Image (cartoon, rainbow, N blue to C red; front, side, top):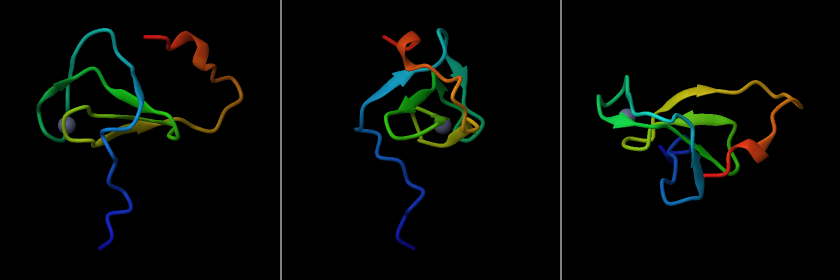
Length: 66
Ligand SMILES: [Zn+2]
């Protein structure tokens, strides 16, 4: 068990939701995070992956500024 699926919560991220969402995994409220090297939204509390993006050229990061 080398924890390859564990997400380092100290990495840079942007928030996904404008309001807090209850996490299905830990029940905590989070706005979701998208980390630099990931195409996934994860819980800001437990790091559980809420969902992932399909690879798409239509994804633009410039709308995620803060
Ligand atoms: Zn969670």
